[in-house]
Image 1 (spheres, rainbow, N blue to C red):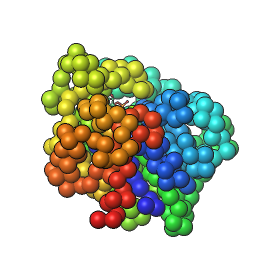
Image 2 (cartoon, helix red, strand yellow):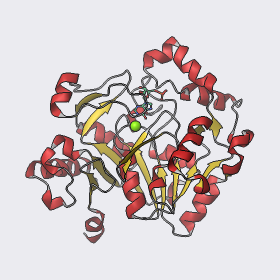
Image 3 (cartoon, helix red, strand yellow):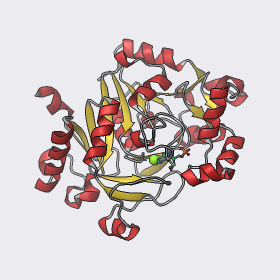
Length: 337
Ligand code: IMP
Ligand code: MG
């Protein structure tokens, strides 16, 4: 599958980081392009260590993978440099010359605006930074001396890699329901989060995409304000083992049971060809760390089949634990049938 887009199906935090790290290792990704901004944290467990990455693409776990940040992304320079050091990827990471810079002043705007606070933003300043980009006053990566060693032409690199048949992954952030256009407006982020937007931010046209994989957690969570159908109490979430705190901001995540209607909408708008479900073990604990579909309980299999029946989309990957390799990979079976 030379070029795959990974997009979130709900309100972010579906476990995209885990899916990306698995694909990086398993498919030996050649190139991984991150889109979006610093507000999103992708959690990756690798070799017993936990990473919460706001800037570095999740493909870093495969040490031969070239890592890029697209022209449509926003770079927070200090965070970028910290993560480059933490993940030791200095020699294989690039930032598009035209990626815009998110500055302290944007974060201050996020934190001091009563309106933005009311929306429950992460406080990183993504909305205000994008506003500047739209006004054409934003600073770009090419204007920042510390980024000089990393400057790249991401669209050209990505398209050349795809044309050469290399394994390329375009990494989305957040989820469809946080999309500025298709989400629960105004309780959304400052950009579109759909697969099309991920392609656009990276500079790759839709005809170059082989698979759009939408990640759906086995239950739904959301941080910040806004509607969450079927929401359960924090106490109930703790009882069910669904209670989570945000990897980026540490805030409590609100939770609700899996929602087939929302999943259908997310798969439709993303043009999904495959689904990856995550955290199956949080809903069906007996499935923890299963690596084979046959190891799943009947109830868990029923849930997976229900997703496939209702959405008409195959569930290609099933996450059964936090480690990158705790996955049931059904892709071979999909191509065989
Ligand atoms: P902003 O993106 O910081 O402007 O925040 C707008 C809304 O999106 C708030 O409800 C945030 O909690 C939510 N949000 C932003 N980034 C993420 C993320 O990575 N995961 C989950 N929610 C997010
Ligand atoms: Mg997250």
